[in-house]
Length: 307
Ligand code: CP
Image 1 (cartoon, protein in one colour):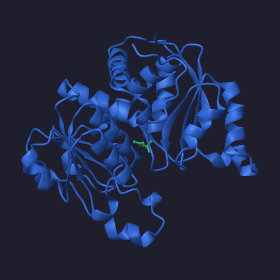
Image 2 (image 1 turned 180 degrees about the vertical axis):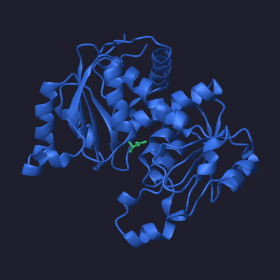
Image 3 (image 1 turned 45 degrees about the horizontal axis):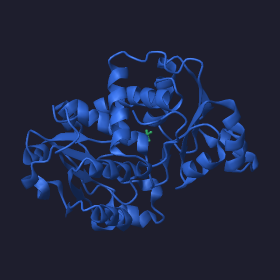
């Protein structure tokens, strides 16, 4: 097993295939009932400087289910940031109160900065439009649960590829497993050039498409849908120009084929019609629920409760 105890989890760029397998395998063990008390006597700080439902609550559920304690805030307005305390000083303080900390922040690089200041493992729960590694861990766990493999998969990644941190992390991971990828987005929300260059440097080819139907010939295993990240647009008009541009419905599923599984990190706005929820293709709520065992596994690994 790769060494996890004491490690920060900031970016997929810091990880290799063995690391990802360790997390997926351990999450499977947790879901099967192993490692029940892996956070006993451990205290986790949950510091959310940006809104969240799934990430914060599944982390907190993970801690409680694994016998640990969790404290923190969901609104930085209730912290001493409101009085002018610097982010670094907050982290320097909280590091003395916990065995690991989970941080979501609107600024790219905030989790990395925290990891340089903290003396306990820091887990990035999303930093601006940059990375969301724990979302990718649960995505991989869900894909493995559904397909029984992480290799030889065809995935369409669709929506706001410019600002969507989940798809940035996921692209790095799927590249490590050699997936065939097609990026589907409006022209103004394409995958950042830095990420595309990294793929090219690694010899990983990819396609681009304007609509999911354009990728129908690929017989996609997965269509990974994301919402347009309204909160990241500097110009409201720029958002209005691209909002509501895509809507996956049962017709889209029929065009892509019955094999396709639809994933979404959630929250959705209007990019997946509710009629899709009832189809066997929709696995996005299972995906969200898998956040709990995956985060139990991760916290157990980095705090040494799982060795
Ligand atoms: N997937 C995800 O990060 O959702 P939340 O913003 O609700 O945490």
